[in-house]
Image (cartoon, rainbow, N blue to C red; front, side):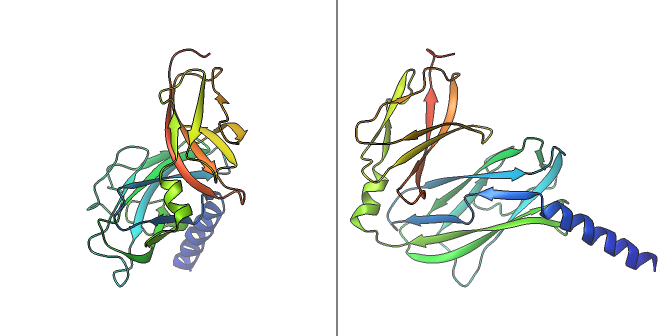
Length: 231
């Protein structure tokens, strides 16, 4: 009887925790050419309560579809790991104290085409038994259309920037969203050709710039260095 009550308590607690987490984007869509370089995707894990959580992550590859030449690795709240590390080390848990927590997922196709789905799971324990959230990374490494090739060439200029920045080669970009390094949205701009996006009022430091198309889909994320000159 005691065992049943204990198992029920663990299940109920884990279920309640899983309802408190979300991520953006979800799922993560990775679309690259086989010959392209490393693609970095920012993912923000959010929690709905002010409670602090200790979190361990784990990648789950499908050996039938994940190409052996591919590389995928994680930058969590503590470190950037190599592609050989597929789960959070027990001694390096992530402390989710902020409501938004920024991870980065790096992918290198290394000249190999294919498609696969990688599971991303968050756990409340270092033994990976209490799953609290899961999402996926959907990978497609194929020859791209002309539109996709143009998106690869999207750049921020100037960078570093103090007063404003522009987005070049951005015919498909309709909206630009700025996030600080904690994953908090700080500015949103409607984008048009040769638009200058004002940042003079921002504090110095690094920001994540996400470019969205007319369907509100993120087509590229880049880092912007805000240099001295603002508040």
